[in-house]
Image 1 (cartoon, rainbow, N blue to C red):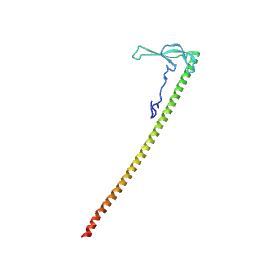
Image 2 (cartoon, rainbow, N blue to C red):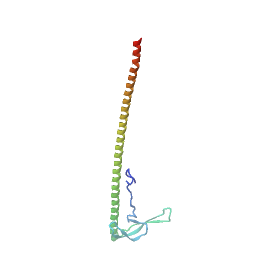
Image 3 (tube, helix red, strand yellow):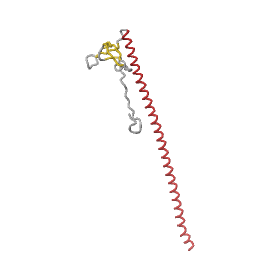
Image 4 (cartoon, helix red, strand yellow):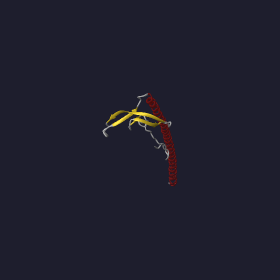
Length: 165
């Protein structure tokens, strides 16, 4: 998205998949043992068990599989996977928070730029108005002076005519 006045001032926004399947805490594929890769790169075995079957109106049946905690070993594996999911969500939240701060800063900056632009435009309009008023006053004075000179010039011949009578 565009965040500045110039071309190239953009920021990209990508929100990662935070659904249960993407976080490895649910499986739509199949039950049983599955090896997943954690954030730190380690491999972790987990077991999925059938949780629910439903009909979505498109296919006959959908089966959802959830993490199996039926034994101590499986429960400990689930704890590792859930901790990893929490870490993934926390990292995504912090990344989105940083992006939100950046966007808020950009919005505030654009508000200040708009305010400064409006103030500058107002000063320019005030200056233009003052200049036009000065020109008007100058022209008005010149006009009055011309009228006074014309009136005086018209009085001179009449004064001569008065003397001749």
